[in-house]
Image (cartoon, rainbow, N blue to C red; front, side, top):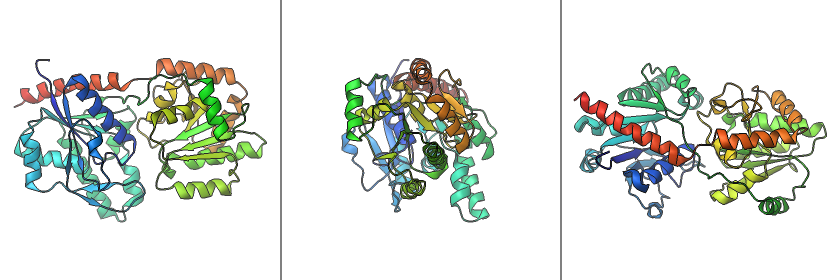
Length: 391
Protein backbone atom coordinates (compact mmCIF):
# COMPACT_ATOMS: atom_id res chain seq x y z
CA UNK A 1 0.00 0.00 0.00
CA UNK A 2 1.61 3.28 -1.13
CA UNK A 3 0.16 5.50 1.59
CA UNK A 4 -1.44 5.20 4.97
CA UNK A 5 -5.20 5.39 4.61
CA UNK A 6 -7.11 8.06 6.51
CA UNK A 7 -10.34 6.46 7.77
CA UNK A 8 -13.40 7.95 9.47
CA UNK A 9 -14.94 5.38 11.83
CA UNK A 10 -18.52 6.34 12.66
CA UNK A 11 -21.23 5.12 14.98
CA UNK A 12 -24.15 6.43 17.03
CA UNK A 13 -22.54 5.54 20.35
CA UNK A 14 -19.11 5.55 21.97
CA UNK A 15 -17.90 5.36 25.60
CA UNK A 16 -19.09 6.23 28.17
CA UNK A 17 -21.95 4.34 26.49
CA UNK A 18 -21.06 0.65 26.51
CA UNK A 19 -22.42 -2.03 24.20
CA UNK A 20 -21.08 -4.48 21.65
CA UNK A 21 -20.81 -1.93 18.83
CA UNK A 22 -18.91 0.47 21.10
CA UNK A 23 -16.36 -2.31 21.66
CA UNK A 24 -16.05 -2.73 17.91
CA UNK A 25 -15.42 1.00 17.37
CA UNK A 26 -12.78 1.10 20.08
CA UNK A 27 -10.92 -1.83 18.58
CA UNK A 28 -11.09 -0.60 15.00
CA UNK A 29 -9.72 2.79 16.05
CA UNK A 30 -7.00 1.30 18.22
CA UNK A 31 -5.81 -1.24 15.65
CA UNK A 32 -5.86 1.17 12.68
CA UNK A 33 -3.95 3.82 14.62
CA UNK A 34 -1.45 1.18 15.73
CA UNK A 35 0.49 1.17 12.47
CA UNK A 36 -2.13 0.47 9.78
CA UNK A 37 -3.15 4.06 9.04
CA UNK A 38 -5.03 6.89 10.69
CA UNK A 39 -8.52 6.58 12.15
CA UNK A 40 -10.77 9.29 13.54
CA UNK A 41 -13.87 8.30 15.48
CA UNK A 42 -17.02 10.21 14.45
CA UNK A 43 -19.88 10.00 16.98
CA UNK A 44 -22.61 12.16 18.59
CA UNK A 45 -21.78 14.27 21.62
CA UNK A 46 -22.38 12.77 25.06
CA UNK A 47 -22.58 14.89 28.20
CA UNK A 48 -20.42 12.34 30.08
CA UNK A 49 -17.75 11.92 27.40
CA UNK A 50 -14.12 11.51 28.48
CA UNK A 51 -12.46 11.68 25.10
CA UNK A 52 -9.12 12.88 26.50
CA UNK A 53 -8.47 9.27 27.51
CA UNK A 54 -7.89 8.21 23.91
CA UNK A 55 -4.73 8.82 21.90
CA UNK A 56 -6.61 9.46 18.65
CA UNK A 57 -9.09 12.09 17.54
CA UNK A 58 -12.75 11.72 18.43
CA UNK A 59 -14.93 14.12 16.45
CA UNK A 60 -18.26 14.73 18.18
CA UNK A 61 -21.23 16.19 16.35
CA UNK A 62 -24.45 17.69 17.75
CA UNK A 63 -26.81 15.39 19.62
CA UNK A 64 -29.92 15.34 21.75
CA UNK A 65 -29.70 13.77 25.18
CA UNK A 66 -32.54 11.64 26.44
CA UNK A 67 -32.76 9.89 29.81
CA UNK A 68 -31.87 6.20 29.79
CA UNK A 69 -29.97 3.73 31.94
CA UNK A 70 -27.48 3.14 29.15
CA UNK A 71 -26.51 6.72 28.32
CA UNK A 72 -27.42 6.84 24.64
CA UNK A 73 -27.76 10.12 22.77
CA UNK A 74 -29.49 10.89 19.46
CA UNK A 75 -27.20 12.26 16.77
CA UNK A 76 -28.36 15.43 15.02
CA UNK A 77 -26.09 15.83 11.96
CA UNK A 78 -27.99 18.46 10.02
CA UNK A 79 -25.80 21.58 10.20
CA UNK A 80 -23.88 22.35 7.03
CA UNK A 81 -20.71 23.28 8.93
CA UNK A 82 -20.58 19.73 10.30
CA UNK A 83 -20.35 18.35 6.78
CA UNK A 84 -17.49 20.73 5.96
CA UNK A 85 -15.63 19.55 9.09
CA UNK A 86 -15.56 16.03 7.67
CA UNK A 87 -14.72 17.16 4.15
CA UNK A 88 -11.72 19.19 5.40
CA UNK A 89 -10.24 16.09 7.01
CA UNK A 90 -9.73 14.48 3.59
CA UNK A 91 -10.79 10.98 4.55
CA UNK A 92 -10.01 8.20 2.09
CA UNK A 93 -13.03 6.21 3.33
CA UNK A 94 -15.90 6.55 5.79
CA UNK A 95 -16.92 3.42 7.70
CA UNK A 96 -20.21 3.55 9.60
CA UNK A 97 -21.13 0.93 12.17
CA UNK A 98 -24.72 2.12 12.58
CA UNK A 99 -27.26 2.69 9.78
CA UNK A 100 -29.02 5.50 11.62
CA UNK A 101 -27.88 9.07 12.41
CA UNK A 102 -24.19 8.66 11.59
CA UNK A 103 -24.86 6.88 8.30
CA UNK A 104 -27.26 9.70 7.39
CA UNK A 105 -24.50 12.16 8.33
CA UNK A 106 -22.12 10.37 5.93
CA UNK A 107 -24.78 10.53 3.20
CA UNK A 108 -24.98 14.29 3.57
CA UNK A 109 -21.19 14.59 3.50
CA UNK A 110 -20.77 12.44 0.39
CA UNK A 111 -23.48 14.41 -1.41
CA UNK A 112 -21.08 17.37 -1.21
CA UNK A 113 -17.84 15.46 -1.78
CA UNK A 114 -17.78 11.87 -3.10
CA UNK A 115 -16.01 9.62 -0.56
CA UNK A 116 -16.28 5.81 -0.56
CA UNK A 117 -18.34 4.44 2.33
CA UNK A 118 -18.67 1.11 4.09
CA UNK A 119 -21.52 0.16 6.42
CA UNK A 120 -21.25 -2.69 8.91
CA UNK A 121 -24.70 -3.92 9.90
CA UNK A 122 -24.44 -5.19 13.48
CA UNK A 123 -27.93 -5.11 14.97
CA UNK A 124 -31.32 -6.65 14.20
CA UNK A 125 -33.16 -3.34 14.13
CA UNK A 126 -36.50 -4.96 13.40
CA UNK A 127 -36.60 -6.12 17.06
CA UNK A 128 -36.43 -2.55 18.39
CA UNK A 129 -38.65 -1.08 15.68
CA UNK A 130 -41.46 -3.57 16.28
CA UNK A 131 -41.21 -3.31 20.07
CA UNK A 132 -40.65 0.40 20.60
CA UNK A 133 -42.26 2.32 17.74
CA UNK A 134 -45.91 3.16 18.47
CA UNK A 135 -47.70 3.16 15.10
CA UNK A 136 -47.34 1.57 11.68
CA UNK A 137 -46.66 4.89 9.90
CA UNK A 138 -43.80 5.56 12.33
CA UNK A 139 -42.45 2.06 11.75
CA UNK A 140 -42.70 2.50 7.98
CA UNK A 141 -40.76 5.76 8.21
CA UNK A 142 -38.06 4.13 10.36
CA UNK A 143 -37.65 1.16 8.01
CA UNK A 144 -37.47 3.48 4.98
CA UNK A 145 -34.88 5.70 6.68
CA UNK A 146 -32.83 2.64 7.65
CA UNK A 147 -33.00 1.12 4.17
CA UNK A 148 -32.00 4.35 2.43
CA UNK A 149 -28.93 4.61 4.66
CA UNK A 150 -27.96 0.99 3.96
CA UNK A 151 -28.42 1.37 0.20
CA UNK A 152 -26.27 4.52 0.19
CA UNK A 153 -23.14 2.61 1.26
CA UNK A 154 -20.69 1.53 -1.42
CA UNK A 155 -20.22 -1.78 0.37
CA UNK A 156 -22.24 -3.46 3.12
CA UNK A 157 -20.59 -5.74 5.67
CA UNK A 158 -22.19 -8.15 8.15
CA UNK A 159 -20.55 -9.91 11.08
CA UNK A 160 -22.14 -13.29 10.31
CA UNK A 161 -24.17 -14.94 7.57
CA UNK A 162 -27.20 -14.94 9.85
CA UNK A 163 -27.11 -11.14 10.02
CA UNK A 164 -28.02 -11.06 6.34
CA UNK A 165 -31.48 -12.39 7.26
CA UNK A 166 -32.09 -9.17 9.15
CA UNK A 167 -30.86 -7.13 6.18
CA UNK A 168 -33.37 -8.90 3.95
CA UNK A 169 -36.19 -8.33 6.45
CA UNK A 170 -35.67 -4.58 6.33
CA UNK A 171 -35.76 -4.69 2.53
CA UNK A 172 -32.09 -4.73 1.49
CA UNK A 173 -31.55 -6.78 -1.67
CA UNK A 174 -27.93 -5.97 -2.49
CA UNK A 175 -24.65 -7.78 -1.97
CA UNK A 176 -22.73 -7.99 1.31
CA UNK A 177 -19.38 -9.12 2.70
CA UNK A 178 -19.00 -11.19 5.90
CA UNK A 179 -16.44 -9.45 8.11
CA UNK A 180 -16.29 -11.14 11.54
CA UNK A 181 -15.50 -9.25 14.72
CA UNK A 182 -12.50 -10.02 16.88
CA UNK A 183 -12.16 -10.59 20.60
CA UNK A 184 -11.29 -7.98 23.22
CA UNK A 185 -9.24 -10.37 25.31
CA UNK A 186 -5.99 -12.23 24.72
CA UNK A 187 -5.89 -16.01 25.00
CA UNK A 188 -5.67 -16.49 28.76
CA UNK A 189 -5.39 -19.39 31.14
CA UNK A 190 -6.75 -17.99 34.41
CA UNK A 191 -4.61 -19.28 37.25
CA UNK A 192 -5.94 -21.55 39.99
CA UNK A 193 -4.93 -18.86 42.48
CA UNK A 194 -7.04 -16.19 40.76
CA UNK A 195 -9.96 -18.60 40.50
CA UNK A 196 -9.72 -19.32 44.22
CA UNK A 197 -9.67 -15.60 45.06
CA UNK A 198 -12.87 -14.88 43.10
CA UNK A 199 -14.63 -17.92 44.52
CA UNK A 200 -13.75 -16.83 48.06
CA UNK A 201 -15.04 -13.32 47.29
CA UNK A 202 -18.47 -14.72 46.43
CA UNK A 203 -18.45 -17.72 48.78
CA UNK A 204 -18.66 -20.17 45.89
CA UNK A 205 -17.96 -23.77 46.95
CA UNK A 206 -15.07 -25.29 45.04
CA UNK A 207 -16.92 -28.38 43.84
CA UNK A 208 -20.11 -26.98 42.23
CA UNK A 209 -20.72 -25.89 38.62
CA UNK A 210 -20.52 -22.18 37.81
CA UNK A 211 -22.38 -20.67 34.84
CA UNK A 212 -22.09 -17.15 33.48
CA UNK A 213 -24.17 -14.77 31.39
CA UNK A 214 -22.25 -11.74 30.13
CA UNK A 215 -23.88 -8.89 28.25
CA UNK A 216 -26.56 -6.24 28.41
CA UNK A 217 -29.40 -6.94 30.81
CA UNK A 218 -32.20 -6.82 28.27
CA UNK A 219 -35.06 -9.31 28.04
CA UNK A 220 -34.77 -9.89 24.31
CA UNK A 221 -31.43 -11.63 24.85
CA UNK A 222 -33.47 -14.54 26.24
CA UNK A 223 -32.37 -13.97 29.83
CA UNK A 224 -35.77 -15.21 30.97
CA UNK A 225 -34.92 -18.64 29.55
CA UNK A 226 -31.63 -18.69 31.48
CA UNK A 227 -33.38 -17.90 34.76
CA UNK A 228 -36.18 -20.40 34.18
CA UNK A 229 -33.70 -23.14 33.24
CA UNK A 230 -31.69 -22.45 36.38
CA UNK A 231 -34.85 -22.47 38.50
CA UNK A 232 -35.69 -25.88 37.05
CA UNK A 233 -32.24 -27.20 37.95
CA UNK A 234 -32.49 -25.79 41.45
CA UNK A 235 -35.93 -27.33 41.98
CA UNK A 236 -34.39 -30.68 41.02
CA UNK A 237 -31.83 -30.30 43.79
CA UNK A 238 -28.85 -29.21 41.68
CA UNK A 239 -26.35 -26.91 43.40
CA UNK A 240 -24.61 -24.30 41.23
CA UNK A 241 -23.96 -20.59 40.88
CA UNK A 242 -25.04 -18.30 38.04
CA UNK A 243 -22.97 -15.16 37.46
CA UNK A 244 -24.88 -12.32 35.81
CA UNK A 245 -22.26 -9.91 34.49
CA UNK A 246 -23.42 -6.65 32.97
CA UNK A 247 -26.13 -4.02 33.20
CA UNK A 248 -28.96 -2.70 31.08
CA UNK A 249 -32.43 -1.24 30.80
CA UNK A 250 -34.22 -4.34 32.14
CA UNK A 251 -31.82 -5.12 34.97
CA UNK A 252 -34.22 -4.33 37.82
CA UNK A 253 -37.00 -6.39 36.26
CA UNK A 254 -34.58 -9.27 35.68
CA UNK A 255 -33.47 -9.18 39.32
CA UNK A 256 -37.11 -9.21 40.46
CA UNK A 257 -37.85 -12.21 38.26
CA UNK A 258 -34.84 -14.07 39.64
CA UNK A 259 -36.15 -13.47 43.17
CA UNK A 260 -39.62 -14.63 42.12
CA UNK A 261 -38.05 -17.89 40.91
CA UNK A 262 -36.33 -18.29 44.28
CA UNK A 263 -32.86 -17.89 42.77
CA UNK A 264 -31.72 -15.26 45.25
CA UNK A 265 -28.95 -17.32 46.87
CA UNK A 266 -27.85 -18.84 43.56
CA UNK A 267 -27.28 -15.76 41.37
CA UNK A 268 -24.25 -13.48 41.66
CA UNK A 269 -24.79 -9.99 40.25
CA UNK A 270 -21.59 -8.18 39.31
CA UNK A 271 -23.11 -5.03 37.82
CA UNK A 272 -21.20 -3.01 35.24
CA UNK A 273 -17.58 -4.15 34.87
CA UNK A 274 -15.08 -2.54 32.51
CA UNK A 275 -11.77 -3.93 33.78
CA UNK A 276 -10.71 -6.65 31.32
CA UNK A 277 -8.69 -8.60 33.87
CA UNK A 278 -11.66 -8.71 36.22
CA UNK A 279 -13.95 -9.93 33.45
CA UNK A 280 -11.38 -12.55 32.44
CA UNK A 281 -11.40 -13.80 36.01
CA UNK A 282 -15.16 -14.34 35.95
CA UNK A 283 -14.92 -16.22 32.67
CA UNK A 284 -12.09 -18.24 34.19
CA UNK A 285 -14.10 -19.48 37.15
CA UNK A 286 -17.07 -20.40 34.95
CA UNK A 287 -17.64 -23.84 33.48
CA UNK A 288 -20.08 -22.62 30.83
CA UNK A 289 -21.26 -19.39 29.21
CA UNK A 290 -25.06 -19.38 28.87
CA UNK A 291 -25.92 -17.27 25.84
CA UNK A 292 -29.26 -18.32 24.30
CA UNK A 293 -29.74 -14.98 22.51
CA UNK A 294 -31.21 -15.14 19.02
CA UNK A 295 -31.03 -11.34 18.80
CA UNK A 296 -27.26 -10.91 18.62
CA UNK A 297 -25.74 -10.93 15.17
CA UNK A 298 -22.31 -12.13 16.26
CA UNK A 299 -22.01 -12.58 20.00
CA UNK A 300 -18.65 -11.10 21.01
CA UNK A 301 -18.95 -12.82 24.38
CA UNK A 302 -18.70 -16.27 22.78
CA UNK A 303 -15.14 -15.47 21.64
CA UNK A 304 -14.37 -13.74 24.93
CA UNK A 305 -15.30 -16.88 26.83
CA UNK A 306 -13.30 -18.98 24.34
CA UNK A 307 -10.23 -16.86 25.10
CA UNK A 308 -10.40 -18.33 28.61
CA UNK A 309 -11.21 -21.86 27.36
CA UNK A 310 -14.80 -21.50 28.59
CA UNK A 311 -17.28 -23.07 26.14
CA UNK A 312 -20.70 -21.60 25.35
CA UNK A 313 -24.22 -23.01 25.35
CA UNK A 314 -26.04 -21.46 22.38
CA UNK A 315 -29.32 -21.79 20.52
CA UNK A 316 -28.99 -23.95 17.43
CA UNK A 317 -29.37 -21.86 14.28
CA UNK A 318 -28.74 -18.51 16.00
CA UNK A 319 -26.13 -16.06 14.70
CA UNK A 320 -24.13 -16.52 17.90
CA UNK A 321 -23.93 -20.26 17.15
CA UNK A 322 -22.62 -19.72 13.62
CA UNK A 323 -19.37 -21.65 13.19
CA UNK A 324 -19.90 -23.66 16.39
CA UNK A 325 -19.84 -27.46 16.16
CA UNK A 326 -21.95 -29.15 18.85
CA UNK A 327 -19.82 -30.91 21.48
CA UNK A 328 -16.67 -29.83 19.60
CA UNK A 329 -16.29 -26.05 19.93
CA UNK A 330 -19.43 -25.36 21.95
CA UNK A 331 -22.82 -26.77 22.88
CA UNK A 332 -26.14 -26.26 21.11
CA UNK A 333 -29.70 -26.44 22.40
CA UNK A 334 -33.22 -25.43 21.42
CA UNK A 335 -34.69 -22.05 22.28
CA UNK A 336 -36.46 -23.14 25.46
CA UNK A 337 -35.80 -23.23 29.19
CA UNK A 338 -36.44 -26.99 29.15
CA UNK A 339 -33.76 -27.61 26.50
CA UNK A 340 -31.24 -25.35 28.25
CA UNK A 341 -31.80 -27.10 31.58
CA UNK A 342 -31.66 -30.58 30.03
CA UNK A 343 -28.41 -29.80 28.21
CA UNK A 344 -26.81 -28.33 31.32
CA UNK A 345 -27.90 -31.36 33.35
CA UNK A 346 -26.10 -33.68 30.95
CA UNK A 347 -22.99 -31.53 30.80
CA UNK A 348 -22.43 -31.15 34.53
CA UNK A 349 -22.14 -34.91 34.72
CA UNK A 350 -19.29 -34.78 32.18
CA UNK A 351 -16.81 -32.09 33.24
CA UNK A 352 -14.07 -33.64 31.11
CA UNK A 353 -16.19 -32.93 28.00
CA UNK A 354 -16.73 -29.33 29.08
CA UNK A 355 -12.97 -28.83 29.53
CA UNK A 356 -12.11 -30.49 26.22
CA UNK A 357 -14.65 -28.41 24.29
CA UNK A 358 -13.45 -25.25 26.04
CA UNK A 359 -9.86 -25.89 24.97
CA UNK A 360 -10.93 -26.58 21.39
CA UNK A 361 -12.98 -23.36 21.34
CA UNK A 362 -9.88 -21.50 22.49
CA UNK A 363 -7.84 -22.81 19.56
CA UNK A 364 -10.51 -22.99 16.82
CA UNK A 365 -13.01 -20.12 17.15
CA UNK A 366 -10.96 -17.40 18.83
CA UNK A 367 -9.99 -14.47 16.59
CA UNK A 368 -7.97 -11.47 17.74
CA UNK A 369 -8.93 -7.91 16.92
CA UNK A 370 -5.53 -7.48 15.31
CA UNK A 371 -6.36 -10.15 12.73
CA UNK A 372 -9.97 -9.02 12.33
CA UNK A 373 -9.19 -5.34 11.70
CA UNK A 374 -6.23 -6.19 9.42
CA UNK A 375 -8.64 -8.15 7.21
CA UNK A 376 -11.09 -5.22 7.22
CA UNK A 377 -8.34 -2.71 6.48
CA UNK A 378 -7.13 -4.72 3.49
CA UNK A 379 -10.71 -4.70 2.20
CA UNK A 380 -10.84 -0.88 2.49
CA UNK A 381 -8.37 -0.62 -0.38
CA UNK A 382 -10.58 -2.82 -2.55
CA UNK A 383 -13.59 -0.60 -1.79
CA UNK A 384 -11.56 2.53 -2.60
CA UNK A 385 -10.28 1.05 -5.89
CA UNK A 386 -13.81 -0.03 -6.89
CA UNK A 387 -15.12 3.44 -6.04
CA UNK A 388 -12.44 5.18 -8.12
CA UNK A 389 -13.07 2.91 -11.09
CA UNK A 390 -16.68 4.15 -11.22
CA UNK A 391 -15.84 7.84 -11.06
